[in-house]
Length: 137
View 1 (spheres, one colour):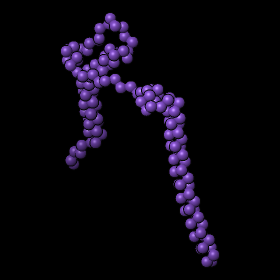
View 2: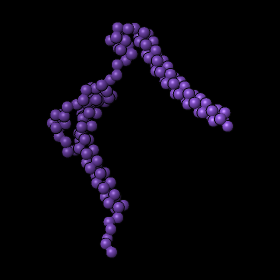
View 3: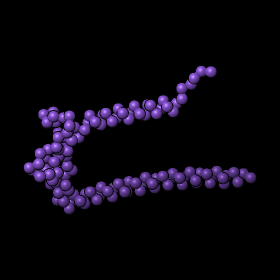
View 4: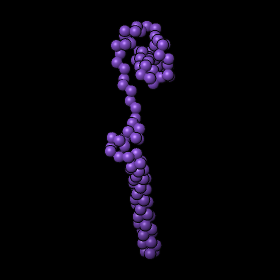
């Protein structure tokens, strides 16, 4: 009788391999993550004292971590900034935003009403067919 390989050990080895590859990729991405956090702290996002030095990571020299470009900080504009850019007052912007939300609610309500109308039409057709069959008897 031939020896048939079992599927569970093969799946276990495959899952273990995937986990190892993911762990290695995460370890390689760690300096990038740390440099991004360090840049955030240096830009004033963190509340670290100015006289502290940036922490170092073992195995990564300072020149290599300084050569990695840091992503620019992205912040959502406030309502006042949006209003100023659009040439509106903050109250007008708030009214426009609430109208947009209301438009979304009305569109959803219209969609549900159309669905209900379609269901009613199908039920009416079903009842008409039943009346026709009963009148034929």
